[in-house]
Image (cartoon, rainbow, N blue to C red):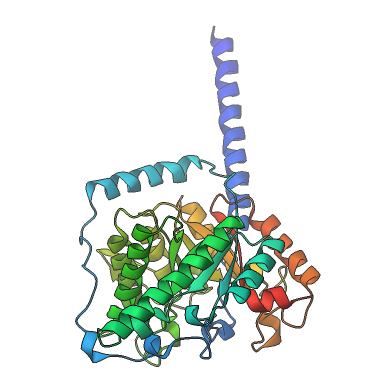
Length: 395
């Protein structure tokens, strides 16, 4: 009996040691895979998606007449449902439930103001988008603010009606070509004091539009880039907190609507990028990217679109490397929010951040590398190309 016990004990010790060794190897590999990559390229702090030539002046200027219009503030403390969701998330992070299999997004932006769109233009951009396998178009509706800020009267009503009809035609045509449409809006100052009415106006327009039409917007998207504000370098935490609060209030305002919610961000908002400060919001001290994940996870099918603008996927400072921190943070936290990787094709400096003056074949090859690299992550939601006109012009 004593000999048998010794053998049994020996086997247990060997088993424990083997398990410990395997665990150590697994941990070592996971640490390599999740290696932190601090951001070093400050060019990303100057990158912008929207163009001064496309944005409506009313989206930029501050109209004091509307300064008191704002969203209702969401509850400050976590609700029971939020706490339950957080508990589920914690369990998921431990057991690594895979949620792969959903169709990936392949989106592109259309900046052409709605009132400038002709039937011929709509037909052209949508048919070409379909031919290039685009399945979502993010259409800018910033120009609605030109109408919103007008004096109330018959002319304002006429223009609002025309704006809605053009949007309806665009969405109907896109949907017939199996392309979903998201409403996009934003400017760097929208989260600052006295500017919230702009966001409030467009969000309510989108909700009302969906309530009145059979063919609806699939979602609403913010492209607010507060890091471009003059005040950003003076007080980064305050500017980022304002932005996070705007996103939170908007998510709350979307309420029971079926609208998806997406937010465009640069590639340095994550903790491991070491380019932004930690700040407190809603009782939690964290970095902007994590705060955004916590908010967006409250809405089904939300996404964060990361401006990972490089014209090469692999290697030092390539698209994959500058996106890895965000992908890993979402993965480790077992968030449901998808991470979509955006690429640039517009004529913008410096040359290495854009596929302008390259070929469509080269762009597709690099996108394929991104897709292959991030396909292991359940959070990977697909690719977005900025922007449709430049993308479709590539040969």
